[in-house]
Image (tube, one colour):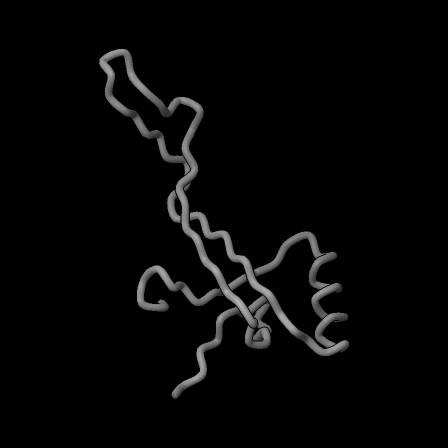
Length: 87
């Protein structure tokens, strides 16, 4: 069985999480909602916005690395997409 890399942050492979949950959602503009005719109108600002919840059991070294990542203003994240065959 091949190992699946779930997360990569700033080009660093992250250890296998003990739990991994991915949800994708759309962000709608304030102008979305019901029209006077009674139909729904959706004005999408962004489609497929990812929210990832993970849990880890890590070594003290990885805890330190995660703490340093947390302080950065921006992170580049690649993730295993469970919604579409993992690509």
